Length: 447
Image 1 (tube, rainbow, N blue to C red):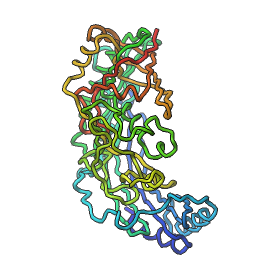
Image 2 (image 1 turned 90 degrees about the vertical axis):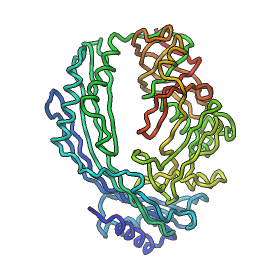
Image 3 (image 1 turned 90 degrees about the horizontal axis):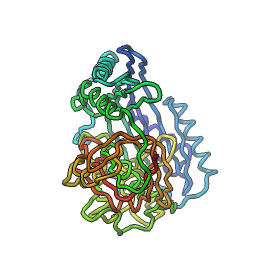
Image 4 (image 1 turned 30 degrees about the vertical axis):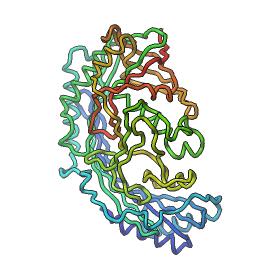
């Protein structure tokens, strides 16, 4: 295992020796194993070991980034020299720069986030057994003609960051996942659906039989799908796709989009963007959640905050550069890849859950569409005009009537978000905790 702290120190020294005014760097190290099964037999197995380093140098208000997967001293020296040469030719950007030392996280308890499984990584044989059991459970269900994919994987990843402003630190996370895709019917009458689970701690993972059974139940329910009628109807987004609506909101409050003017919420600060009573809380410090982290990619301490409170937009998602462009303070939302400078992105979010179940909302909807899958998109980020392909179930008199496919759902995101009615079924172990959402008055294009 590589000492990422020493590696980061070496990159900063090389940047200084090459003439950089300031610099920051990131190092990633990880390993993973994945297995796919077909017909009870091993179909594909892959093991990966990776290390990647990235260096950003600053010359005044000019910056440049370089990356490599070779961590030899000669490569690090070459990286620094190349980055400084690139920065000399780069245009000036008045908003670039490292955090002030008094902004930096100094002490944090990464262990409190519980991001590392105490158990050893599973062997390929154990992963194969999990995938085979999920496949067998799906095939044992009446109506399943085949399983097109069953796979399991495990991995770990370490991140370490350092900068010439004095910041140094990182964290470590693990993961285990299992999924199954089942098919019902034959020929042009085939329908498919899936189920999967992924956790930081393997002990929390759904067992293979549960994964296979749910995949099969979802698939059989889609047998005989047809197009729904065309018209204006309410739409209920099932919990497994409802997060996409909140994802569009998060994209619209991203500081990069706001600074470019490419957001349908660019003028909505302090205005209602969700119904009264609903909060959208970002919390990067939730234990055992994959999106959690103690610090952001610029060394600022992570903290819980409200993006939306009582329906009203409270703030953007910002890193240092976008905050400076907008005349605001960073919200500690910087993310970083090895080959590029920091950019803003949200972490874990929780939308206020309602009191009603999904079935209660179906009854409230009366006649309309329950969406359980989505494909493709045509979304105008500037205006919020929304159109997506969808599949799911047609609902009549508050009950599921028949499965549907090959339809399109359209509306305007600003109007849609203002009218959502949440159910009470959000999963609390995922990074985007959003329940099923009922939206009124969308246009459905079907038969």
